[in-house]
Image 1: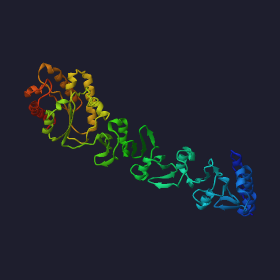
Image 2: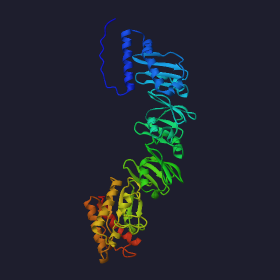
Image 3: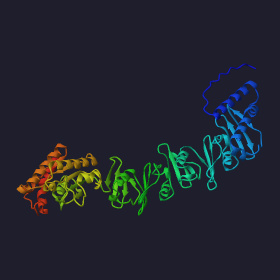
Image 4: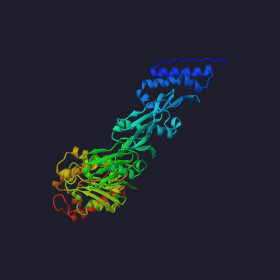
Length: 501
């Protein structure tokens, strides 16, 4: 027999079990090399009998469950992987250097393990003994997962990130109970059903569950994680009158009156800021060329993924002018006639008596800048030909400070520019006569148009324009329709010049 040299590198042994396994492995190697005996005989006589004795002595349950041996131990050395097993009346003992000795009891867990291929199957060798689950079932850990049994659910696998989430929630004692089926592939991830829910997992979202009820039913109907919503990003939440759950591509909302509806993420976040403003969603969100539409009880909205802004469900094009103002927009106003003369035959008009840059009204419940930035007022979606804003008269009447007017006006214009990048925004001044009682209106006109010019907005001063037209007033500040008609051509000429048309 040729001589061999062996170098043994010693490392700290951290436990009695680890120390025993290391010693056993060393004896196994030396026995095989020095004696030349077969692997099966050497391991059986030198090692495995001692492992069996140690297990039965240390675990009274194993001794009781296994009872008498029904075979001698057999060992194998497959490509350097050494393992041994021995059968008993009540089950078997399995041993390998990585796992140590563990027993499997006859019954559903062992039957499932054997049917799946045993040691060479998907679960690998056992790594611990069977565990009682409070009289409700049993489980056992293996190298590549666990098996869980209950009379109601049978034996099911429990593996990976889904098992980690299940254990973190309390396992079978938690909200989802026992698994009822094996994992299955869905979308770009996996899922597993439980007695009271389903846990879904993907690499990007982690593991989260749905629970029985309207939201889960709707999610399944939509195709689960392979459907438009994707994977859950959290569990279901209850908040007073409604429930919701977040998914990769949106939310499901269960309301007390409209049922469970799917809503996109952008619209949902805006809705949550002021649900009373919109009411409950009454239809699922849907997508067209304009963006993501959602119909709420109070209003239809469009979420634009490009601008990441919420708009009303009204759509506009280049032929349309959006006209924002106060009561000066009554009738066929000079602003509207000027817009048509500038090539915008269609209009969306938002005019409120008493409104101003610093003034609020019951109808608007806020100044223009506040209602636009908080989405109390939603503007149409699309690319309008122009936006006209005719405000300032009520600020002049209230003798608002110059600083307040400019601050609110600037915020309003900036928000309009953000909502409609590339669309011309025309800032009109305050219509007035040359009379002394309109002096403050003329002053505010100058203040507004000069500030608009400094910020790069198209602007038209209309100070004294009513006098130049010989227009008629029905009171001290409001033109008659005939007055509007007289002013309109003069305004239109100034507007066309401002637009370089």
